[in-house]
Image 1 (cartoon, rainbow, N blue to C red):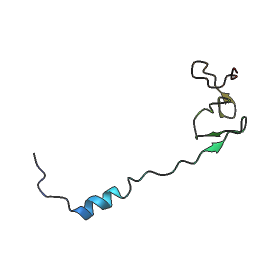
Image 2: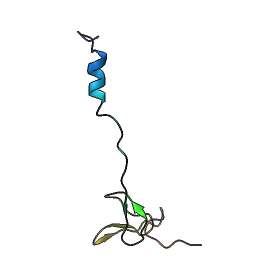
Image 3: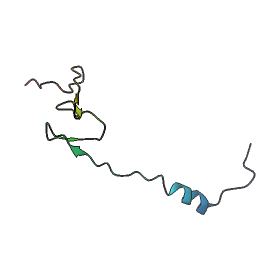
Image 4: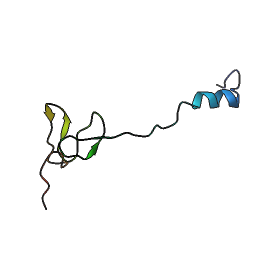
Length: 67
């Protein structure tokens, strides 16, 4: 099937004007001081929010780094 009426360039571009990517704004982890995304675990300390700290040894999250 084809559309009954064609969309104009202006109408398509006005709709797409909201599709632009927005820059990310990381915050600082209070435990390690490294930048982390909101609602994500810190890669260094495993901190997510007050009272929640996770540890995933397979991914190296929240575990001591071996040198």
